[in-house]
Amino acid sequence: MKLEHIGIAVKDIEKANEVYSLLFNEKPYKKEIVESEGVITSFFKTGESKIELLQSLHSNSAIAKFIDKKGEGMHHIAFEVDDINAEMERLKEEGFHCLNEKPKKGADNKLVCFFHPKSAHGVLIELCQEIK
Ligand code: ZN
Image 1 (cartoon, rainbow, N blue to C red):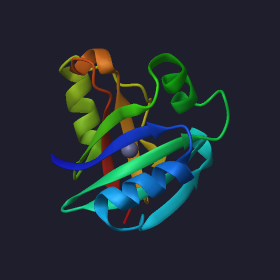
Image 2: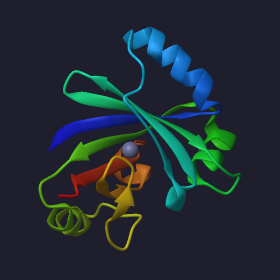
Image 3: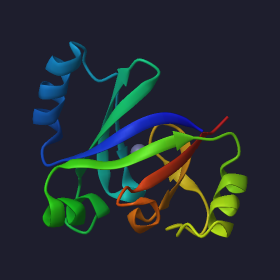
């Protein structure tokens, strides 16, 4: 597994883009709406990994609920795998609580699935695999 990106929940993605553009001295290379998740995202390159900013599009999204509960901040860590179905099954067998029945289409042309923070000492884990 390789660290693919870190997801950060933000209230206002335009403002956050400005701040992170200053931090990295570079604009986001991609902005994308993920209807299925109810979010708008932007991506910054940081060496081999990325930072994903996520803003909710409506009050029912997971990001809106997260911000209501915890405020803005780090939301998840994503790891890239070669075979997401196999890794999902392996982790389920190891007792990790998977939040998805099967991998679904996420941002950045990837199949993704999530594991409950309780399974990983308080960190929401995303697995992702590039769609080829
Ligand atoms: Zn992500």
